[in-house]
Length: 129
Image (cartoon, rainbow, N blue to C red; front, side, top):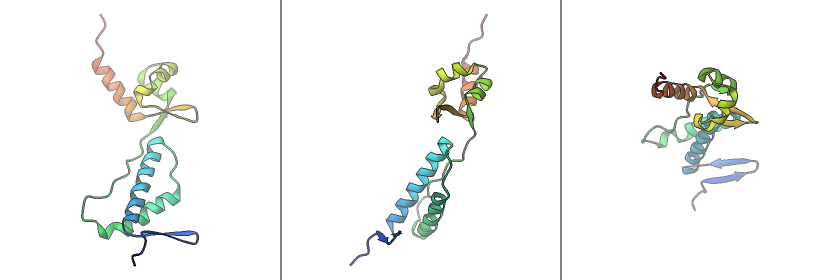
């Protein structure tokens, strides 16, 4: 008789084999998405990632597990407007071009994306006569 990969033991869950790997990948992906949105990462999720990583470490000879991207600096409409020398309203109009995200009704931008947009704009604009 084989032991199931996932078992419920009262209010606890026992993961084994591929289930540990799946939980690790799910936790890493969730943390990456939360980081990308600038949302807080719950401590239990970080703990789950660490436990799954250590539990599955001895079974892998392939590539390293996925890494969680570093959290970049998030800025609001007013800071993006300052960086691009535009009005906040004009930034709202081009928010999607800047990969902006609405968070609680406020547009949020990645500073690096805004600076890349500025560089691209500055190198492609034609001088006016």
